[in-house]
Amino acid sequence: MERRFEKVGIAGLGLIGGSMGLALRRGGVQVLGFEQSPQSAARALERGAADRIGGTVDGCSLVLLAVYPGAAAAFVREHLSEFAPGTLIADLCGIKRCVCAELEPLCRAHGLHFLGAHPMAGRETSGIDSARANLFEGASLVLTPGKGFEEELLEAFIRLMKETAGFANFVRATPEHHDRMIAYTSQLAHVLSSAYIQNPLCERYSGFTGGSFQDLTRVARLNSEMWGELFLKNRDMLCEQLDVLMENLAAYRQALALGDGEKLRALMENGTRIKNELLHRAQAQDLSRE
Image (cartoon, rainbow, N blue to C red; front, top):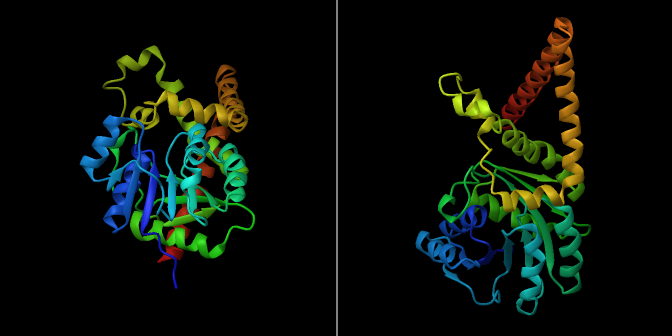
């Protein structure tokens, strides 16, 4: 008999948690929401992201933690006496090492299952008003199951996420590999976008771009509290990627300063080659799924 999650608790009803609530309820799942902001809680009910707000997690076979990393373990500890044995707790935080290191042993010690999960989807704006039921459709979900995690339970979670939220790809990783990759694919891009826009010339860009300026500054509008926590808790991995980027930028600057056209062309051709290889690989993967 397939395991089903008919009642799900969601801690944090912002962009990610609110979108999860909308998607799950659309799929017929009962959602119990937890939200510290009274305004966000009321708005979540208005938008249909939860059936009700607050109370206990008793009766929830799955609890999703869509809060800042530092608040994830605190929520579990606060409600520890309410969880039924065997409850699955999945965090949706943007970093994994610090969250998994704290929650895996805590859950194990109290007969609970813990799963790290990171939805690879988002928007430039945050909060419950930015939540969308289709936010995760076609997206990837990175999973970091710990040693000995029950395969049947993992498959049940994947099935729920696929059938209700519309995730199309599920990637397994260790917390360490997740954090290193996210430092490159997400955090570095946000730092670069924020740094790039802090140029006095940005105020005069109108009429001087065909779209490249908008592309590079798309994620410059940062929630400084959330992203600051993510950056600092993953600072070793992010600093590694910043070092690589600055080394690459230095190579361009040196070629320009020396007027070395051959070196400059070689750098650009190498970048073009890598991008083309990535595009060809992605196209091959798409064809293999058909």
